[in-house]
Length: 265
Image (tube, rainbow, N blue to C red):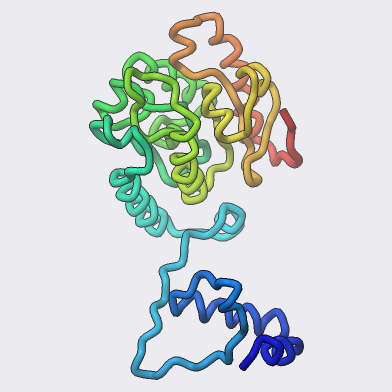
């Protein structure tokens, strides 16, 4: 069959016909075509003796997770699989210097996910975000909005500690960003409290400084986001605690209201 024959035959195909053919090729392991190969061949039903592999469906999108109930046990299974994937990740240079990955801790049905920049030395040692002196400030933040420490989820945009606690490089953030997004999709929080410029850049887009993103409610895939300073910054700059308190009040209000729309930076 030449290309003109193929063109004549496929002119009457519907979108459903094309989609079914593409799905069949995907199942058979065909994921690309060259210009010479491009030509629709008849869809041949597989022999009954040849099993067709059925890929495991990915976790639902955040929009579906928000509107459809998902058993906690299912989220626990997905998070466990993601943790294993993160611990074996070799996508960037940080995998060569880490002692262990720091994925996140907390309740998988938490109403708020708190996101920082990257693990530091103490966090890498304990395997938990916001360790050391920053932990006390963080616990104060949680209590300020009336939440139990065990009813929140903590994570960082970067899952491996950068050497010397340096600022993560753009390519390191790029490799870790999908892991963060999948965490958020699985936990489906009502709100996100993002702390530090690097974390804000990752979730909301580049800003010149943290103050540019403060004081307003942003949205990430339909989830309200409040931006503020990182607890470590509060340790170095005590005067920033007042501004963090204002951001926490905004977070508290956000949890109490059904906000619509989006604030742009």
